[in-house]
Image (cartoon, rainbow, N blue to C red):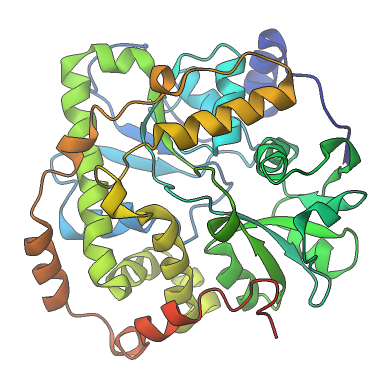
Length: 386
């Protein structure tokens, strides 16, 4: 399906119709929740993807294995593959936390959803554009006049600000919704000039025989990536704030642990999803998690800990997104908060590092040289790809 640019926004009425009809809110069995009651139910995190069988969510699976979420009733759901479902479900009380891209978060704010970002997981821009080998442009502005393939139409809100930040004339870009999970295969088959991708997925695509070259956002983009959002009203309830802080503490501590022992993160995910382990194998699994760690960690010397929002980066995104939409940008400090970050990072990094160093992993994962993979993590970048 071709997407016209710029597209009109979705009305609130239409959004609710789509959520209740096309997305089928009862399909994943989530209870309907009131907007501001204590978390006396299973706390549900919902993915922006139609699957959980990826390495992206390694902090949860590792933290769960290490006992970081003990005493908390938590669950993860893949949700529908509709790119905006993760914020719709949170807004309607069908889930408690979503993981949208900045573009989908911005979409939710424009549609009147009372959301707030509480944990900026993606410190660097995880998104990239994939090209068939030898076809990547020396200057990303050469995408003008070309076609970009997307897995979901909602991903246009990811691409537009990223391209606009690089000086691309968006009126000269054509987007085609090629479907999840087939948009990468469509690029390989010559159905478009480029495809949206992201860190971690690069390694997964190699396992599927999709060997592309990339313009990498982690190298070139000033924008943030996916973040954890909740209903703003939840921050008005002290019991919920306490739960959220402890929940995010599990993520932050698990990411610190995996930073020192990435194989432990891979092993936790592979144990949860044996099919993914079979498809990726140890080396590509390690490459995937290392790519994502680079995004999640960012420049920690300039951050207030895991999940800390760089408000300047977020404001840049909102300004660019609003320029595309012709709307007033939200104020980053109004819709993002670092209030929970100190509590989330309240642990001894030295103690976690020591525990990670002593943690034993399977021999096949232990045999993978993480430092060697880090040295080659940008080999697929345009100009480096062989």
